[in-house]
Amino acid sequence: MLSNISWSNYFMVVVAASLFYYLVVVVVYYRGDLLQAFKKRALVSTSEDEQSPPWEAYPQKVNEAKMSVQMGKTKNQEGDESHQISSFTDEVRAYFEQIKEKGVEKEKLMQSLRVIAGKYSSLGNSGSKYMLEQFVTAEAELHCAVALGENEVSNMWNRG
Image (cartoon, one colour):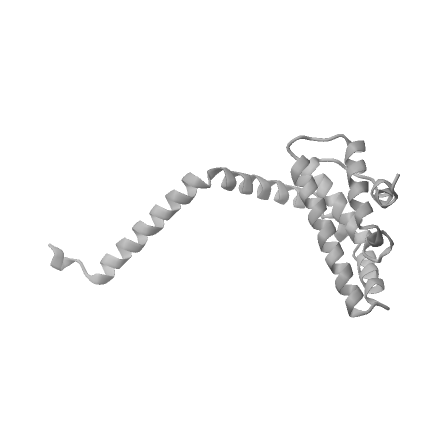
């Protein structure tokens, strides 16, 4: 009976059994994460079908902002600003992740955004300001289902 089984058949069965085993392990242990990922992907795909993200609506302005940032700056300043931009976006994203389950009223949201933007006040005067405002608007809509107006977001750079 064992003489009828070739080595290639044996390895195919072992590989198939291993894949099935690890698939079951992943589904059992990461079920919640997988469901959340599929829900988020479905939410993103339906919102993309309805309208494009705000920053795609104004590509010319974004390109102009990028050009003005690149002009007249040394490489050291560009690196410092890109580090600040990365820190700002990480902090905003973390804040929205934190409050998305709780829900928050719009005024408290704007107050918190003003505090975060206050830490990075130099970005409020940079050419990247518009792009960052569009990022905040998109994150608010994605995580909190809150529509922020252009004036509201531009006022986040003003403390007070």
